[in-house]
Image (cartoon, rainbow, N blue to C red):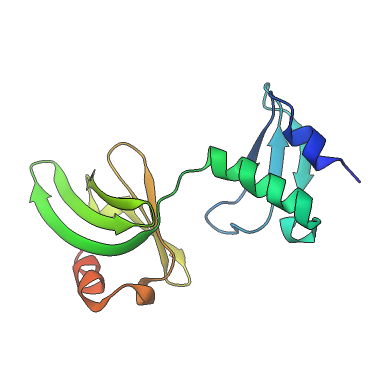
Length: 140
């Protein structure tokens, strides 16, 4: 068994999810500074609590994916649409260029990729309030 905590404490390693959109809870690789795989974890749920916490903390530092809780407004802009949304990290505005910036992940989940490449996640469309769902239906 690998000592995951010792590996994650090295300054030149970084964890990445191998299938972040299709299988977000499994398959995490630990890469060194050259991009070489140091370790691969098929199912982080099988790690003990201490190792799982260390892995989740390292992943949280690397991945920033705001979760959309509510869509406040969507307005037309010269080169796309401006969205004002409430996320798990607060209220923010972003611009999407085309309807293709909204992608289904299956099981009622979608990802919205803004003009700058930031991804916003809607984990379950049905969890949005009725007004937010109505606004989203026009574009998705």
